[in-house]
Each structure stands twice: as C-alpha cells, then as structure tokens.
Length: 96
Ligand code: FES
Image 1 (cartoon, rainbow, N blue to C red):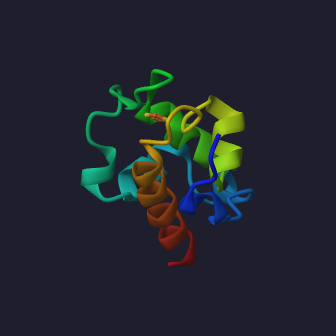
Image 2: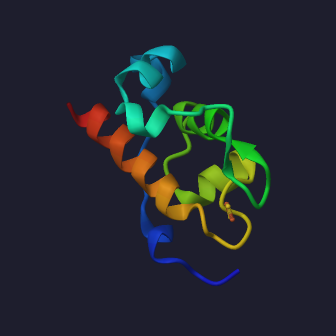
Image 3: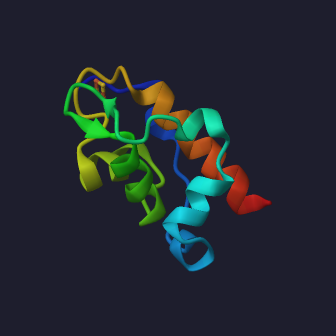
C-alpha cells in the first residue's frame, strides 16, 4: 500500500477509555461525525463507523493502529480523511 499523508498522525489514545465510556465519547463528538453510526465508514472493508470509533476508544490513535484493530483504511485509503477527522476530534476532546 502506498504511504498516505495522514499515516504520520499518531495520537496517544491509550488512556481514553479511562476518561470516557464509549457512549460518552459518542455524545461529546460533533454530531456530523457521529451520524449514521451503523453505516460503513470504510466501504472497502465494510467497517461500520461505530466499529471504527470503538477501535479509537480502545486506544487506536493512528492509521496503523486503526487498521490493526478493525481493518478500516486497509483498502484504497479513500476513508482516511474521515478517519483523520475522527482522530483529530477525539484528540481535541482529550486535550479539553
Ligand atoms: S474506504 Fe476505507 S480504505 Fe477504502
């Protein structure tokens, strides 16, 4: 797979679950990012948005960790902008 410009994003979400439950995390994210949770965020691998957010909640803070946790982003890479938006929003919440 070709390197992608968002592959360098690396946040530490290892303690995220100690701070927020999954439901709290969803509730605190911008509504635009949590719409249609059952729909596939990663169409290439049929990975629902809720599965991706759960992977981030469980500590996946980079494209590689997300890929390892749930396979999202492991196709053409066309969902990586959406993954970046979620990663950035969660990092912002973490820093608040
Ligand atoms: S939609 Fe996720 S890699 Fe293509």
